View 1 (cartoon, rainbow, N blue to C red):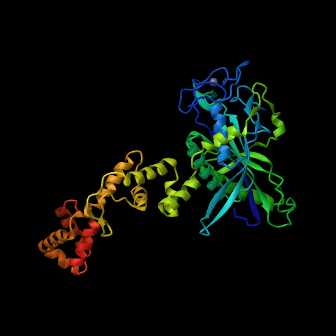
View 2 (view 1 turned 45 degrees about the vertical axis):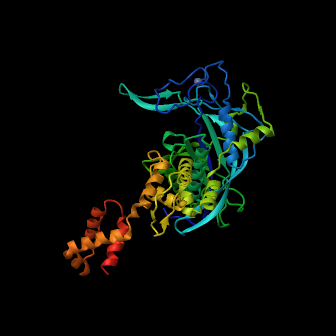
View 3 (view 1 turned 180 degrees about the horizontal axis):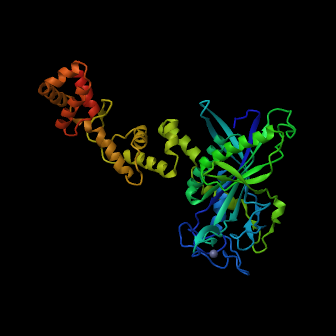
Length: 478
Ligand SMILES: [Zn+2]
């Protein structure tokens, strides 16, 4: 299939994020369903038994609003739950409690910096967020073989787990933009601490909807550039960033071919087949009317006041973009270092703790730094040096405390405490003991130098760095 430049992809995204609250959305059952014995975290509410009444989880609703606030959404002061009616075996009640026309958060935006790998350029783009609403997860079907028979079993541990659905406007024009958005969204919910957003556990599930807009006017369906195409293909429940990229690329090619042949792609829901690397038609797309939404009669509407929203806003942590800018300003870090260190909140906190420790603990011993200037007592370590050490040495922040790291950096800084006079004495000794290697080196065998460095290192017993020794030997052998 060839790529086609006569079309621009029009892509919107629906992302489901499972919240990490202690209990489920409408009952007291434990929320940690993953890996548990089937049907052990259930009760009449999440099993959908007649007469069982839902009680909304306050923490989950606050988390949903926090996500909305972090995505620059407006939080309407009135909100409600609705019933979304459909039949599927994993939905015992016959309806899902969701939000239809009055979600908790609307009209937000997220700014992206997108890298174009091919053109080696970077551009900014703002994606509009249509809404972030609260709903409950369904049970899980397991297709297995029992006594030689193919059967479908249902596990209701996941039924009623709090889910936030974040819906964008169809603002994406490429798979790269979608991937950038998803990474940033995952980073934000993790910073907020409201979800682990672990893709492998299904805690973050992706549904792109894709259509193509014609860049030329001679194609019948495309009326004008600001109008959206009159069809939409939705790809359901993808659980990896790379699959979503592949599914989009596949759909763009598939749809372009259909349009080229003069037809319009069918409005439908498709699934991504990981093995065949293609999307496969599942069903023709439902309209909202098919779900017969109506207000959930067992849960009264929510009425917030400005004070409540302001209080929630005040609990938001510093988010990745703000933190990145502050790191650059406050610690004079490069953009590259700041970006890497703020990738997770834990890593950013680790770095800042290390900086704090480096400027408060043990007065450093007198000695010589890497750059040759003497270490002053109590001198702090350049934050860039700390950043570089964390990044280059791939420090495992689970295993090494910030204070240990600083001790290590300081100890390498004082490694060169052996005075250069003493080091030169030892180096001269080694040179006179190894005349053959000296001649080899002078004859152009550079390996000989490494041997000599090794001999000196043995004698200085860790009091000088290899780089310093090498430099010393090179100078002496000039
Ligand atoms: Zn329950």
